[in-house]
Length: 111
Image (tube, rainbow, N blue to C red):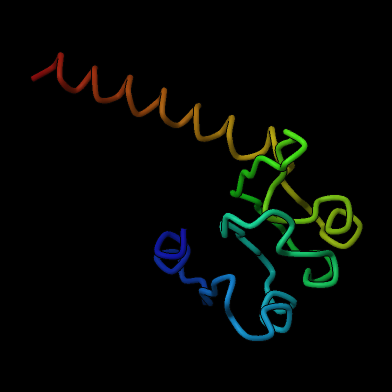
């Protein structure tokens, strides 16, 4: 995702779950893509007001419930736009996989 955004002229900062003062960095992001593998790592206080938050993470909690890497209920009050987990980027991933599979099959048939 970082390379795709850079390719479109975006300034990208890449962090991880061990980045010191992560919230100070995430609060600067107009687009925040979160994929850490840690449930609710990014809280509402770490989101810039009006930011687009794309939660790519999927975690199974001890209760069996699925949760993202963003504390959704907190972040949705701050973000201008946010993807839910489950049901956010997952369906888009499946749609793109199907599209790419069909394109590859068509290309193979033509050659």
